Image (tube, rainbow, N blue to C red; front, side, top):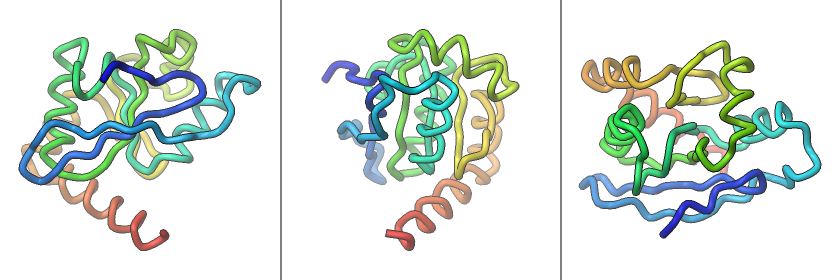
Length: 144
């Protein structure tokens, strides 16, 4: 499965609790072709409770920081969406200014920026990430 993420879709990765390889499927997030890039970013964040902006995909991360962040998220065992910023240069250049966060990956949960690799790794090691991800996934399921 290659990266199929573009302006018109965000991919969603589902991981089982045993840490198996992700099952990836596209999640429609609206028609971004006619939207300003900031509106695109806002729509992606609003449409996906757990969203990772990363280099590559969960199946094939393209940098060590993205790989470590995906590993921590996979260990939480919940679905999350991602955007491959290498395939989306406009998002790659615009998101750091919008988020006031200069680096990638960026994890957004419940519409809020959580942080990058170091913060996610620390949160995972302390158990905070698992709680945040499970609570957010539970709230999303309750809304459905």
